[in-house]
Image: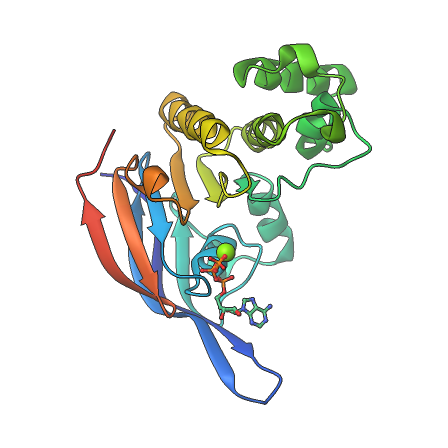
Length: 230
Ligand SMILES: Nc1ncnc2c1ncn2[C@@H]1O[C@H](COP(=O)(O)OP(=O)(O)OP(=O)(O)O)[C@@H](O)[C@H]1O
Ligand SMILES: [Mg+2]
């Protein structure tokens, strides 16, 4: 099985106000299989988001090696990291859409350095259609429901054709019907793109839907539950 993402001896420390040190991720060695759907669960503050940020190179570890799809990202310099980051699909709990832009322009935003304007819009429209929002392309985020905003955010994550998609509590701000739809959409996307999809979640319904559930406790991977699947 091809390796999707591998962490080896990865530690991320934060210095706290009182001078003490917190290991948000503490000496983690772990492998996420390529083209798999994994849930990361654990109490608030256990290190789920930090783990995702390290995998997406939003944050840099203090120690250890991270390899994604054969690329050792912890060996990268600034330019290579920026390039890598642009190829990762991120989905957040708070959607993080740009309020002044229409849905289609939000989706096209990651393509700013690619292709020409017409091509960018075409790719963004195709992605909006794929998430079922072709008819709301001109709407601004405030004109869309939470579930629709998250669909736009997923389309934006996908427009770069990522092999790694990191979703941090993607259903955390949604009612249960919208959450179920978003989960369904993420699952479809993972299959269609054969992407490695990692979802940090508190929602056991999301976890029960994944191939594997990884439990994080105090910055460590404490348990791996396999054999869930749909
Ligand atoms: N920039 C920072 N500075 C200091 N401490 C931080 C920083 N970011 C995170 N932490 C700490 O690192 C630990 C892990 O945080 P993280 O956000 O990864 O947890 P989480 O599992 O995602 O929690 P939640 O379920 O609430 O989202 C927490 O104790 C948090 O307070
Ligand atoms: Mg978090």
